[in-house]
Length: 115
Image (cartoon, rainbow, N blue to C red; front, side, top):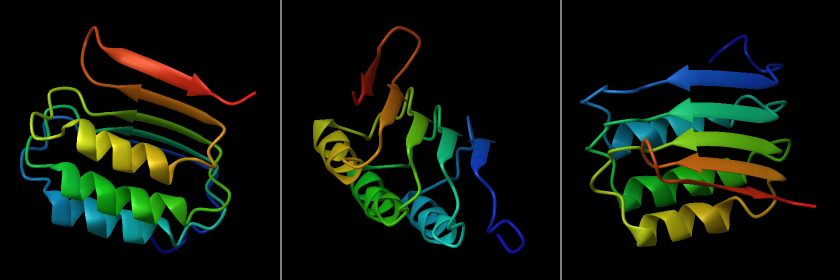
């Protein structure tokens, strides 16, 4: 992600990328740390069914290190291997984020906003 260190908003759609695994999510999270100015992430992982709770936990740990991150939109619709445990770890990692929008499918989503 060279040359993106001053990026403030990043939107990526990995929907139906069947080969994204926990390792890919982990690597992506580590690469995001190189963008020190990132304030908003909009990420879609619909039907990436190789992502598990462990991948979410590791990704959350990387997101926690993004000090300027204030807003995140993240979609995990139809990611069948993600459970309450993975969401718990991800949520704990996002405590400093002011606005969080998570989507888990066509009808099930929730939003948490600080303040």
